[in-house]
Image 1 (cartoon, rainbow, N blue to C red):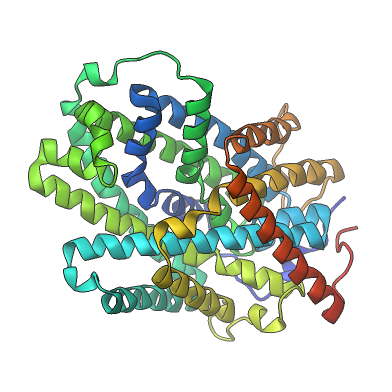
Image 2 (tube, rainbow, N blue to C red):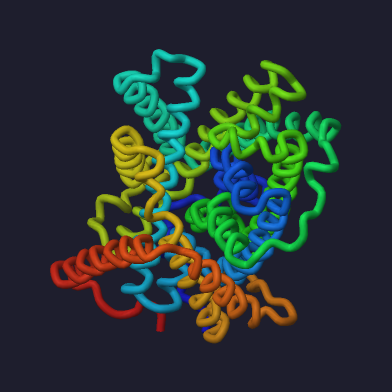
Length: 442
């Protein structure tokens, strides 16, 4: 069943993102500050078998993002996963998906903003205090909001530039470090036990996450039926290769010592074969990577507010489009201000406490929505993505997500349930005051 013309609902936006721009946005959002710390965290759980967790997580994410691609080739509205779930299940579940997307985006960009300020403070102590941190974060979020208000092309160019800049230190680390790997330190220790492997995959989901954020400007993507799948798979392949290479180099240089440098394993490894210059290079790389994540997030996540407002769930002001630049400027400014406040007032750990379970719940909703979209034969622009066995992909993806969720804690489930309850209260309050009801897709 074809969907109503998506161009009408996003008629104020310009379709300017192609495969290179969207791929860069996904890579930039995915490769954040976490990869500069995670090798040690996974090594604590799995030791020399740590690369296995990256491979398993990549396979799991391959199934999940294939579901995204199947859905994204059928729904070309801004909002990303929120739009997919809303199109399949109606406004209420769509709103919950959008709420999960929004809270994860806010927690993610704010936590990375906090990490970014810490990285900068290591080089420039003037930013170590609260006034310096506040000034630094305000400038970062204000400048990126200004760039994105001026146009999605300007935002995409900023993303592309930062993506290249952030990859240079990582590539140097890998290229130089390969010659210093000690084979004994990466010798295969045997297949890891199920529990530590599951915990490692749960941890690494967030190293591979970010695609759901990068897809939110779908209403500004050229030929989404072709662009979205190609960008997703290109970005996943690139990030997987980089992550496994990073883990092998860090582990091959430090071995068991890596767990002693949990806060900066890559910087310590680089110092072993490049000296202090290597440590400085990785620290700068971490700063650029964190800044790149914020840059990419600022391109995508504010469109969730725009999509909520466009659909009547939030007040109309959030869907206003700039008369000159044709961008959702109120949504961008509001998101930047909210993220700045969270980043300045909270710690990295506080901001991430909800992110694991809520993100996977969002993925689960998207997997189920993909099945419904395919069954109804919903179509947006162009021929939707299909291949032999496509029906089984979202089914297997949902099973994998449930397996990963089984490694979460009761506290994480409880906090996620509380958030969904509060989101439901907001939804039904708005429904009673402005008359939101029903499913717009027949």
